[in-house]
Amino acid sequence: MVDAARARKLADRIQQIVAEMLERRIKDPRLGFVTVTDTRVTADLRDATVFYTVFGSEAERADSAAALESAKGIIRSEVGKQTGVRFAPTLTFKHDPLPDNARHLDDLINAARARDAEVARQAEQASYAGEPDPYRKPDDEEDLEVSREDQA
Image: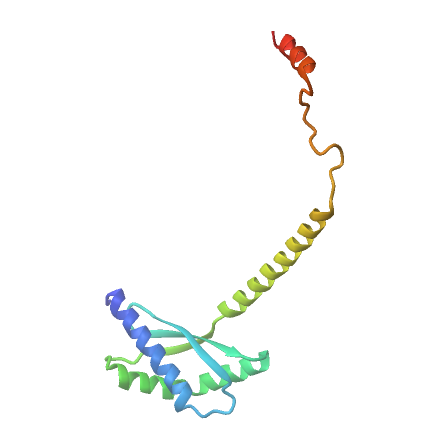
């Protein structure tokens, strides 16, 4: 086993290599607009999971996943050359749902803000059902004296 700092450094380096390979060397027409978001390496440095997102539709996402699977060997050999580790880690590509979840949360927050604005607009035009101040207050000295007698 290796320390976590070395595994993290290797994961960062693999992320850079994969992104560079996708940008410059992989010329598969199925590969869409892919962004490498994160990479995680196991503690024994044998397996690496590369998380990615694809800008586009579900069909473009599926095509990009197929292109990544077919280019996995070339990318792995380049990772082995550039990192200098004894065994090049096996690569697994996983679609990262985080941006989709963030977009969904943004939509929900915007809908809640719109509903809050509608409630605030309705509240501006609203009036009290009864008196504006429902609490009893002594109007003059006589009421004040009556309330003192009740307390005594």
